[in-house]
Image (cartoon, rainbow, N blue to C red; front, side):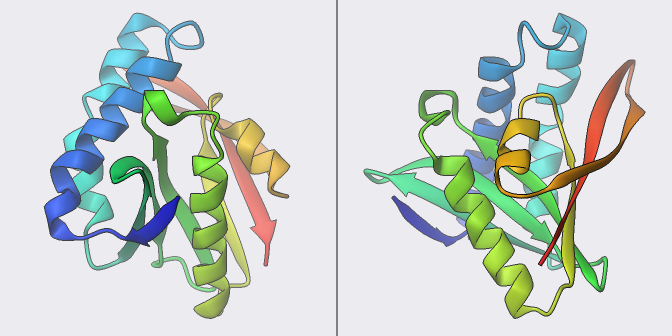
Length: 156
């Protein structure tokens, strides 16, 4: 597996992986309306991840982009894991773990004291395995639907 910095030309791939990840893993845990609303945010998320205030990495396996993750640097002294999406065919193959490890290392290099994130039901297990702890849960409105999220934190 190769982890590399995302570049502007990755935008369409990031968007496609985001939508694919949601559509592959969310059914059964989320309603069809929630899955649609979440997947519909893919293009906006990819654009945000490539903005100057984020550092984004992609994971490649056999020259195929398998997933991506992003560090939002705006929350000094904390960093925030803004995005972490793995393509359906590559889920449960340690791609998320490798990306999260990369994000954590970069946050340490930047001097962040801790990382936070808003984990879904799909990603909470990964965050907990990597040493994050849940600080609370919240319910957010996202278009016509609501989502429950796990707020997590890890001291670096």
